[in-house]
Amino acid sequence: MSFTSTFFANLLIVLCGMFSLWGVSVARKDASIVDPCWGLGFVVIAWATIIQSGWQDTRDGVLVVLVTVWGVRLAGYLFWRNHGKGEDRRYAAMRAKHGKNFWWVSLLTVFLLQGFLMWIISLTIQSGIVFGDSDSFGLLGWIGVALWSVGFFFESIGDYQLAQFKAGLGSDNKVLRTGLWRYTRHPNYFGNFCIWWGLFLIAANANSWWTIGCPALMSFLLLRVSGVSLLESDIAERRPEYADYKRNTSAFFPLPPSRSN
Image (cartoon, rainbow, N blue to C red; front, side, top):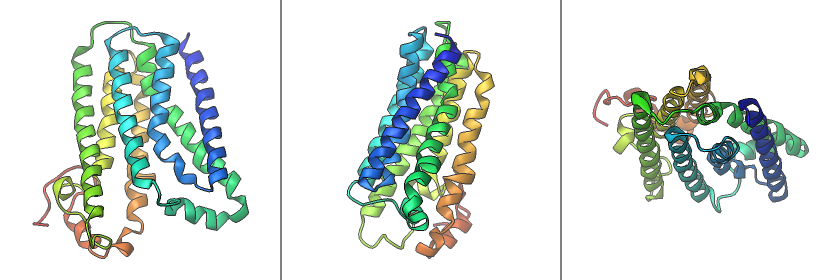
């Protein structure tokens, strides 16, 4: 299949998946179920792409494996974190704001929007698989794998350290200042940033430089929309120590703290 055919076939897959997921959320009155499915959506797209285009070279396998490892881990973590805790406060606030209109508001602004972003950002993966035509992985590909590995370490270890911290007694109003969180206020988001730039470098070797907007869009979302900015918009109200932590710890890129935390 051509890249265009694969691209739009994947759009149909994404739409079917998000409409189905939205239907379940309406029945359960819980829009939070969309969160664990974010990573899994990329896994589905990667496998759907390689099934349609066929396995052509080492790059295809590396991209599919790395996306699968990342997506399954993230989905598993979010499912475990959210299980039994009811609807996330973000969606609960939206539900309270929109009332009886929430069913269609959530369809447009939560499920279809995430599906569209997933489809666009995954262009890097789709292009890297479809246009791969050589068994030569290349130095750039290995640099991409190394960057992905750094990102996976920061994201997974950061999530683990935060989960351990929250499980401790008396942590509700406290701030995690140890481990990776000593060097960046958002090691998991920084890790996600590295993962997507790493995947881009792997795909770029397959004439996919034109997809640079995909990791750039993910970076923008992490920094300015659903990541750092959203989380820090009200965290100081819930955790009084955060103001001091914020003054002395890098927001995103890991750096030594300005003073001992």
